[in-house]
Length: 113
Length: 113
Image (cartoon, rainbow over all chains, first blue to last red; front, side, top):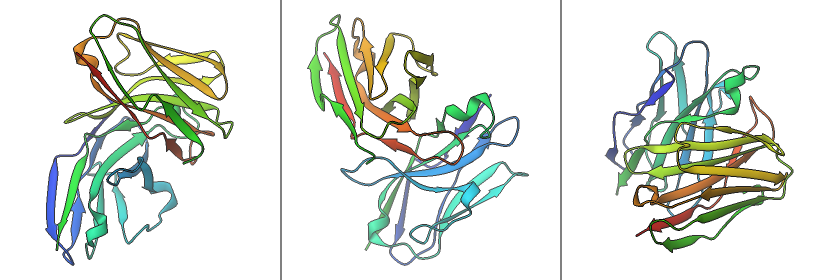
């Protein structure tokens, strides 16, 4: 079954400390993986996707196929990083399941001053 | 925000009444989605559309129906609302598959008493 697991409901770290939000997935094949973010009173928006290998707002995510993980990391947390973060997956672009995104349950990141 | 609006933004209704939520987009996106967001569950797909009059079920479609008679509008209907359908509903739209970004609406908070 296709599934995304985010084991932490809440993660609280001090400003300047490293951040790692965990994400594990279950998918038979090679999924597309994403991180979405929802800041307070704002819409859900794409933060980054694995296929782009990009770094957005200092965040990176590495796909580990052996561990089926896609953890989100940032070396130095900032107060403006406080938000709800969702890990998500979809099928490969040419597959039928590419049109559906499956989201994890989310992790609320709180950055303490 | 890719021109995605939702109406109404807030609604309180009683058990057993029909409710229709509207999603409108101005960017001619082919794919449109309805999700519900609940604590501990993240976002769960209710229904989605891959073109005018083309729709399919998501993982939590029971009790919901959708219609898409025009590219720009995607309606979600609760035929007979129940308290378990109290939630925040998000609409999303996406131009294509694969590397295209899914854009979200601002959400509708529905309370069923």
